[in-house]
Image (cartoon, rainbow, N blue to C red):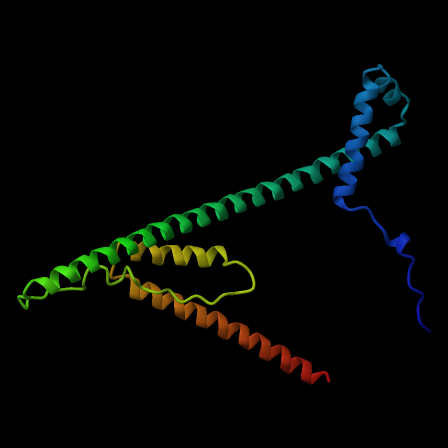
Length: 201
């Protein structure tokens, strides 16, 4: 026989925030009553069992408030760190874009001077200035914003680009390979889920 579904009203249990709110209201009530010197009288009228129950409720509330405080502080630190990462990314991105514009203008001036003067045929050793500054970073647009980890990686690449560092190719390679690994892992998870689904059909 099928069991009757329980009454939703009977299953409703107060959440932690509800209990904290109720207790907060009770505390406010006690504070207001204490101004009329009735708080001590109320406590005196309580039995030992009622006092123990009240003490247990207060200790539970303190524990719940402490846990909530720790969670909120952890969330605050996480949000502050995320904000710092985003600000660093935006700052270095603007610096790179400004340098790219300067490099483009300088290259145009050099090209004009080069066309108007004879070439001596000498070439400087090493990479030409601005070689890594104009690097294009491949990025696959996702449903949501980039993660903090992705922003940190992109910021590191942008810093190397700003300095026209020879580390850019290796950083870029690591970034691309990491993205491919993540794609492969997601693809494998999808295949596993499909295999499990077909097993139960």
